[in-house]
Length: 285
Length: 275
Image (cartoon, rainbow over all chains, first blue to last red; front, top):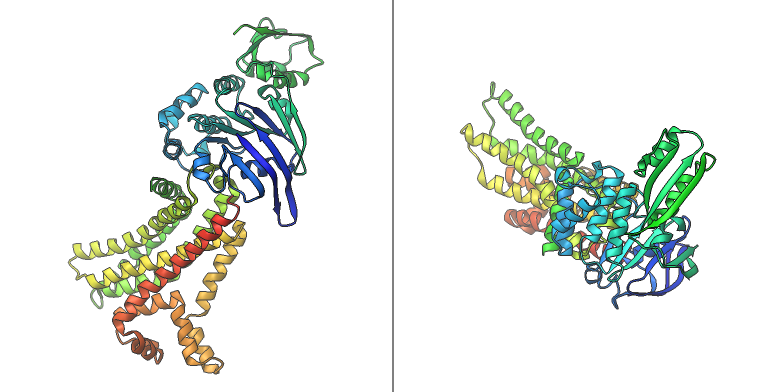
């Protein structure tokens, strides 16, 4: 699906990508990780045909720079930072659908599944939406068509737990038909979504490893938490995960999407001194 | 063609919501309103001095304002969009670079030409309502002149946007281009000639190569066919072109110059990094 052959990219004297070679097959879900300046964004821009580069890149046998419309017709992209567009939501959907040859209703329906009703915000400029709303819309635009390659830069960063759960379900629906490249600063943000990890450091691939693929993208974990004393900050954090208070803020129950388990545990780690018991059990779908 | 139209539409929608466009429209609408106001004020003593004079004044003011307005707003929005990540996202969609670049030019052209034209049209409509004689030939030519001026400076603006990597650089370059063209207007050339450092033919040649001077002379040519206000250089222009020939040159040359600048901008844009 994707072949990178000794891809290098320099900005003046600053070499950002240094001989990157990779082969990524159809159906692979790759986490592209690395610290700031590692070359993740540059690599993504090369894949999208936006940067010139030395070496070779092929997506489905075609160079994204020379055959950009043909290549990009099968690529869905979610940027880390939404573009500050003043155009209304309805027009952005129409614009993207028109270029990608998809039905705008398909994008709206997908946004609806993520919890974003596009009807009341059709005339609102994109730039005026909240971070989460923008993210949902951009995911809906990227996935509201038959993309064979999904390139996503921190796609779930601004989503609430419920929207993340739906997002994981949407990814699960594409597992067999699309290749996914998910970029992140931290592996724990995306580890449960992928079956391969590629780490970049100063423009080179320093780790290319397969990871256990046992986490179901649609799986759920039943969770029960006991705390030593009621704490407003913890109560607020658990409520944002749709947990139910079973008694005086001391006993909480809820469910966590399988791929979100690390993020959830990361949240609970902030209150580890308060937690007396925590139980996570895989639930049947 | 669909991609080009979609891109043009996108640029129109973005521009219509931008503050610069509101100011731009207000400025040109305001000029026409102010000119009418002054014309009507003068009518108490002299009678309304007619639409020809108003159109000449309008076109002269437009020539002073439109180039810098078009240059700065074009480079600001194009280079600004690139810096803000708009290009990164929109160019990840399957749009050809030709459709993107020329669609953006088409959309922006409509956005910058329409307000100046509508302001002039409003003057004509008011004149018709007040039963003032309308110089249709002059109106037609000035419309074409405005169209050529918009094309010329839009082409320059897109070329600068393609070359400059940051908004600051693009703005600085746009201002420099405008300042250079302004420096080579006839008064400064006249000063150089008086000092005897440049042959008169060279000075007139430079003036004819300067689109700002070309517009200015062409606008005057309708009002003053012998170009008496230009002095001896009028002989060079009229001997070489003739009056009609010069009027045609004043439309064709800046349009071709703008198109060439835009084409060069496109070549640079497609060869380099896009965002």
